[in-house]
Length: 137
Image (cartoon, rainbow, N blue to C red; front, side, top):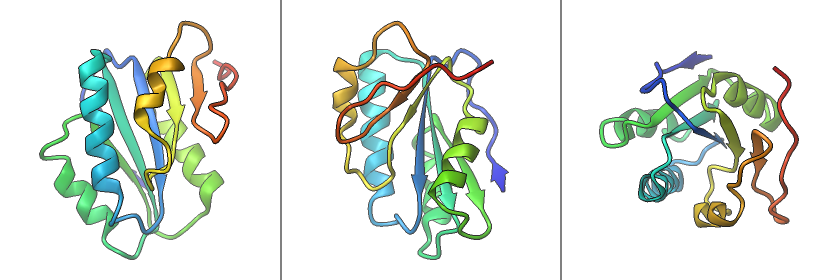
């Protein structure tokens, strides 16, 4: 597993996006998320975990970093499963808050507007827009 270096020290929100063979989707997801979070004025990073993709996802992420400075990537050499991708992403996250979403675009980043409130430091997009619990220090 390799991770790219952090881009900023004042990160408020880390968005963790597990991805497996998402070359067709991850570019739009990253660009949309970054644009929206910039509009909101939230200091953020996007941590995409490429979980051993075979479709060029890792190469696409490397290319995206040229235009999306908030993007960091973690690459698993082989597919380790969704849970492992989540763990790797959360471990790599540097933000005060962590949002878990998915790399296939099934959740709208704009839904964050109604969820991002002071309180827990762990967010999870799901079909129910569930707030998670605090991550132990």
